[in-house]
Amino acid sequence: MNIKSIITFENVYKVYEKGGSKINALTDVSFSLEPGTLSTIHGPSGSGKTTLIYLMGLLKKPNTGEIIIKGIKTSNLDEKKRCKLIRDEIGFIFRRSNLLPNLTALENVMLPMSSSDNKKAEKLLEKVEVSDWNRFPINLSFEEEQKVALARSLVNNPTFILADEPTADLDSKTAQNFMNLLKKLDNVTILITSDDNLLGEFNKFSNQNFKLKDGVLTG
Image 1 (tube, rainbow, N blue to C red):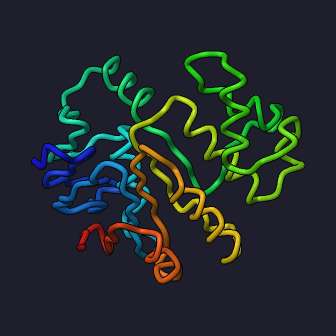
Image 2 (image 1 turned 90 degrees about the horizontal axis):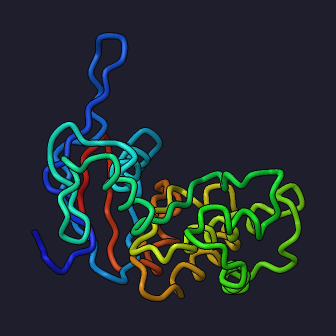
């Protein structure tokens, strides 16, 4: 294991069973992410990108292999320690913003906060360039929704952010604006997944790029 890495996958396998058949979602995946880097994993639909994000975010467990976060082996963590690691170290952004429709932008950002510091939430919304925080999600553009989701992912000062195709519903210009925001973040490691069509646009933002196809990862 590289002791300088924030997160390391060591020979990770993930297999699903459906209708008596086995599906190899990830096969012998090994890689690491260094502090403060922005990395991308690209691949077609069904290649295993979302599975990888769920495993890295400790929302699922691998069948075999080890996932190490800041030197901590996670495969045998009890539920309490696993939840604490998720809360303290990991921020999530998904393709859909998953904002609660009955809460304002500001309230959505504050929802997962370990404190009730609304000033911090306001500063994060300013940082991601969202104004008029009292609007509800129905009154936000797709870009603004994702920016609010980004602010929400930052409220607990995570070590790293996992972004699963967050620009899939954005046009190319808006997607680049969103990537620029990610690139400007300090003291956070970011992993973002995308489909193959966006590879060229993401290359210029990334410190390293990976290819995932049929569950097999290549650098």
